[in-house]
Amino acid sequence: MPNRLELSGITKQFPGVLANDNVSFVVKPGEIHALLGENGAGKSTLVKMIYGIMQPDAGEIRWNGVPVVVPNPKAARKLGIGMVFQHFSLFEALTVLENIALGMDAKIPSRELEARIRDIMQTYGLLLDPHRTVATLSVGERQRIEIVRALLLDPRLLIMDEPTSVLTPQEVDQLFTVLRKLAAEGCSILYISHKLHEIKALCDTATILRGGKLVDTCDPKQETSRSMAEKMIGAGLKDIVKPEARVFGVPKLHVNGLSMPAPGHFGTALDRVCFSVRAGEIFGIAGVAGNGQNELLLALDGELSSDAYAIKLGDVPAGALTPSERRKLGMCSVPEERNGHGAVSGFSLADNSILTARERPGMVNLGFINFGAARNYTGKVIADFAVKALGPSSTAGSLSGGNLQKYIMGREILQKPSVLVVSQPTWGVDAGAAAAIHQALVDLAAAGSAIVVISQDLDELRALSDTLAVINMGRLSDARPVKDFSVEEIGLLMGGVHGKEAAA
Image (cartoon, rainbow, N blue to C red; front, side):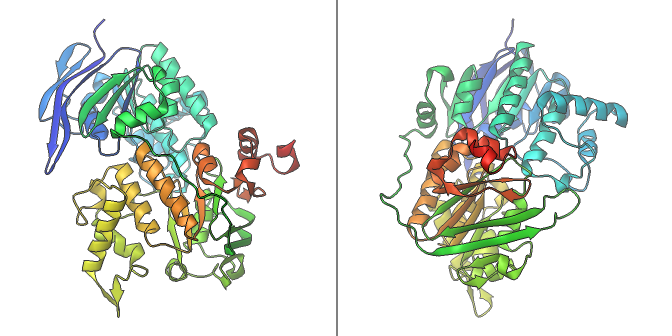
């Protein structure tokens, strides 16, 4: 039986960057094949050529043993290649059903399409109302649309780019069940993920890229997560180092009885949320996507206004203050969605720095912007956080997803805020970059900042947090030292079991 997909000598160059350098590997029928590498290693460029979004400068693609040219995504889908993108291609003003219909090459009657969508969603256990407007959905819920849309095409090769980055462990297990079933039926899976424990659990083969070149092909079940990470980065992986005998200072962020109505018809209302974060403390918030995490972040950073005394920064009532006013008091924040919310894709990195970092690093003097200071600050972010970009003038949209995440995290951390609120801090970044971001957060806390980390990655929260709480349907559980939580109890709280029942 011929290989499902064979790449031979694939090369792709952009101005100043050799994205893929003579890459060759094969994917067999029914194989779940991992594609690994650091951010900027060339993974996304490679799969875009397989899917017809761009063309290789050199090399050959064979499909079922036959040389092919894939001129566009429609041609790829006709061959039987489907793709779930890391960044969503969705129209926010349209419904789930309308977005999926736009992605179909053939016109399908609305009722028939809705029935097929509901069947796929039921199979995955990722239920979603097809008539919901996309603008009302969390990142995790939007990811479900992309997965369903791809599976509706009955692909013979399914490319998945970070499909579990915003799913809970239970949802990941459900997804893996479906992927294994697809593979057993002969569908090949090309799977991109930075979660190496997932690669070990799911994949048959792993191809590892570094700097655009293929450096190894291995059996992930015979490797450790650490060994694969070190092959990706070409160096040893650093562990998080926390200072011994940490002592927390005075509370810098107080949230007392924060209640807010749901923004729009499908948002989540916040119900008497209470917690405080001390100087030097990392406060983790776990939860399933769509349970009020976005609303909580927007309330904390000032994008949604609340009662003035529901949120205090130090001793200052801040609930009614604007985001700019809160930043002047020492608060910085990183939203869940980096494209459009965390950064403007069409702006340069220097201009994006001006948007949120103009006050603390001194980019504004007497109302005038100092563009030199903005470029210097952005250059420091690029250097300190190993952002792969051509410089401060690079547009945010030109960066890979992981590199944009590193830039946004660096932009906020280097302001040395008194209070930092971050959502999904390492979404879509590789193991080496995640370790660097984690260490930067730990170092920031050690310097006296109070940090709130909202994440769906339980491993991340357990490694980083000093104190942990779980949000469900807009309610926050009691906070306790992270060492006092078991994984099972966190799972129960994420599922909506509160108080004594969770502890039973």
